[in-house]
Image 1 (cartoon, rainbow, N blue to C red):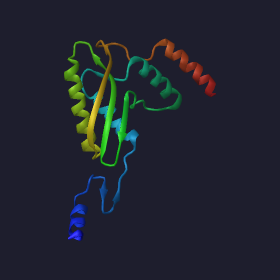
Image 2: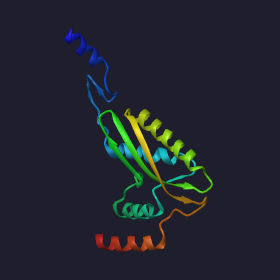
Image 3: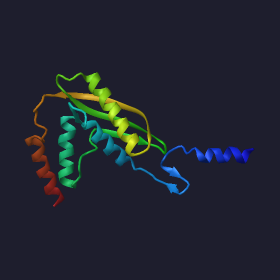
Image 4: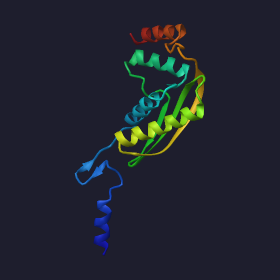
Length: 153
């Protein structure tokens, strides 16, 4: 009887990432990037805050990074993932409606693209922005990039 229970357990994998032929591991940064991109698919959302976007732009300039993960933190297990997002919402948009749309979009994307079950998506709205507001780093940020680039050379 124990053998029968073991074979039933083997037929019910805990994750589509585990099979008889091997295991697929998804790195945290992949899940974070997917979460960040998915959140930005929602109208009226900018990831991170003005400060983090400026600092992220500086880091991207120096390191050549893409900056997709700003404002995203994830915990990834073997079959589940949890996501924390920090974002700005466009002035005039309903924050609860935008947050729920972000939450459902992020869950849907991670579960369909990665195969992990999303246990929670926590959202912190740190600021609002106005439509057409510039998202480029300020002049102060550009000066800082120049000083950082001089140190690298």
